[in-house]
Image (cartoon, rainbow, N blue to C red):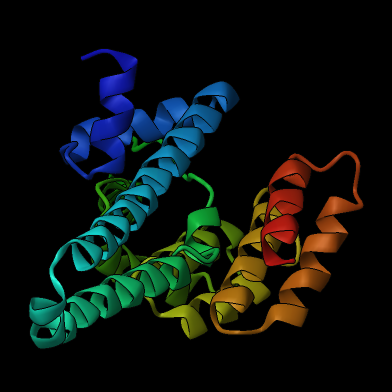
Length: 231
């Protein structure tokens, strides 16, 4: 399928797990593609709103076209329909508010080393993570953390797994424990998103501003986008 069709299928949830993983990997390294996906999402949302406005307009025109006698007996029906449309639009606009999970950056995981017995438990956990089975991966990473409670890699992937299964408190606890290492910057960004998810707006903004003010940060642009969405 061509790129436009692939983007549409991704946004509509029509890709299978393999196709979705491949697409996410492409987005990870292609900023232009990420922008195209975001733009297409906005276009779809705009069409939905336009459709609802058009429906409201047609109902109003119908109300004006009926004769006075019928209008007296059927106005309640038209009013009910318009009210339903208004409620639908209001619900849509409410749901269209920035959602913290929309800013959950892509994480494709680490390579799984086949045939290495010493890492079989880690491989199983990472395989579950990469397959999108975050319930299973969180359980497996947590078992590994018993033996290595300060391992930043285990903490990071366990925290993401918890966040993506809506166990945000557990995710926050583990992101907080990462104070050094390869995943520190990503962990701080994800901690901000987790705080925002839980209603901790001020805590999220503080962390995001730290990232935004760091000109060398690889996540500066992402932090700026979140701060803009939160305003």
